[in-house]
Image 1 (cartoon, helix red, strand yellow):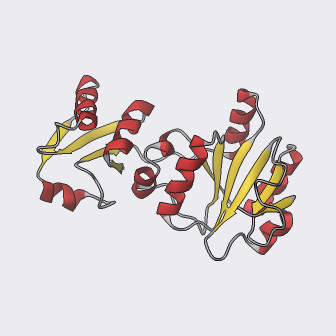
Image 2: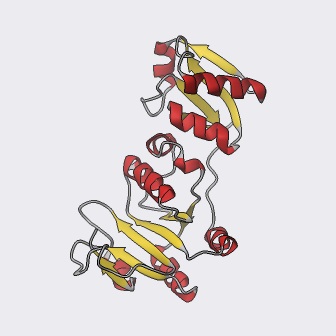
Length: 218
C-alpha cells in the first residue's frame, strides 16, 4: 500500500478534519494528555482508524520530517489538482480569481510557508511546474500547519504557457520582482490576478518576467 506521512499535531488534526483518507495513526506513548493528540485519537477510533502507540525511539525512526511532535498519520498519497479544476473553483465561488504561481521554489519548507500564507489570504489555489519545484510532501504539510489540506495545488508542464492561458481568461499576471518600480502596496492589485513568486536569490525566470502584465516589489 502506498501512503504518505503527515507529521505534527496541527497537521494531523487538520488532516483528520479535512476528510482525507487516513490509514493509521501512530502516537508516541505518554503524549495523549495533549488536547490535540487526545482529539486525534478519539476521532481516529470513532472512524475505525487503527491507532498504534510507539516509543519515542520508534517514532523518531519512522519520522520522515524529523518533527513529528509525537503523532504521525499515514494517509493516501497527495492528489494534485488540475488547472481546469482550479479555474472551476474560481468560477464556482463567483469572486475575483486569486491564484499563486511558484517559479522555481525547490525548498519544501518555503513551499509549506507559502501554502499557509496563500490559504490564509483566501487564494483559490497554487500552481507549480512539474519540474524544478518541491513536491507536496510531509515537510510541506508540517510547515503549512495543515493548510495544504485545504488549498488545492496543481502541477503544470510549463508556467509561461499557463500564464498566457490565464490572460485569455481575463486574469492579470503580477510578478514579484525586487527590481520593480512599484511596491505591492502601491500597485493596483484589484480584480482577478495570479501572483508569480520566484525562488530566493534567483527570483522569477526571464521568460516569466517578460510574460507578466506588471511587476511589483514585495
